[in-house]
Image 1 (spheres, one colour):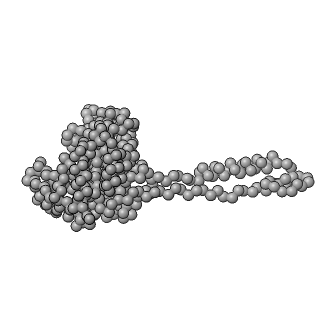
Image 2 (image 1 turned 180 degrees about the vertical axis):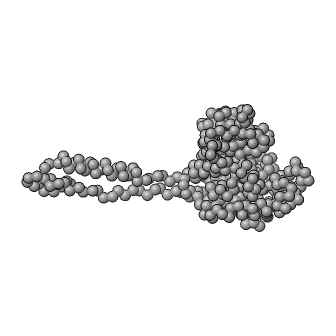
Image 3 (image 1 turned 90 degrees about the vertical axis):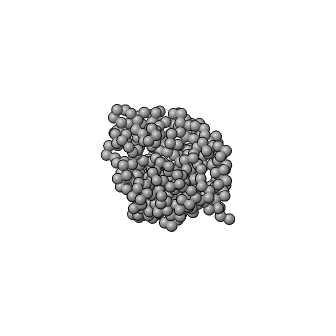
Length: 409
């Protein structure tokens, strides 16, 4: 298990302030002696004739400083977190009731709910703060704290998903934070959604502010997605500005995650991060997007590699078409994850909770139709590699109940 709470929440009580207080106290004592009647010794004594003796300086006993307040443990995590992704519109729709029923009737026990989606919108109405100021709030979820409270009352582990550096709303509202090419045009990936600059501290501050909103709503964990640099031609032409000087891409990602972990642990919330599946073992991909898997694994509480078989190119892991080999692909990816994290000390090593594919990748030539068998094959691969949990992704929030085991008991 990863060490948690080592930095967050403690209050610095160093010796600098205490030493200054001690000097002032000694000066007060000396001044009192100088003003006392002649013939009296400092701090008491009998009167004498003639010249008084030199004052006998009596130092007060050393000050006893209070011990720093202990950092409270973070909330317990289920031994096996098995969850599904839920979009903001679905979380605020009556259809959510059917997903809650699925959670209660099967082995599922967690939800990952969009709090800040790929379009840069918060999925609930924040009354104050930066998101409210820039018009980033969409009231998909009318009562976010109420929903979270209901889920937790049913024993469901709650995770808030926050799309990090992919944020067209912030990019439009704060052009100085947008990621742009030399000609001033916005940088985007497929879909045309603009990104913000991962090097900018103000971007970090905004994301941490948003994550604190999740903590205040009662979520157990915050999961950062798109916590990386964009890819594609536009990204290659991006101008990152002075903030990037002397700093690598993995430094920016790691620096942000360190700041987020410190802030959110102080709020009693765990932190996870989504990672490109190929970045786990492909150094070129990792360097391009700034996701150093081992480095991230020494910072966050949980790593969530997206090991969807459809996302691996033909020939990867020695497989002709990974999409048609769900068990073999996921098991090979989890083996690579273990190898990548082997150099991280166990007491500071993140848990690993992979994203699995519960959809059919129709865009892949020669793709396989995914159903209960393919879903179960991926879950089995995770279990066979000794990992205790997993998450299911389906953009439409339609999950294959037949591929899930019934709830225990």
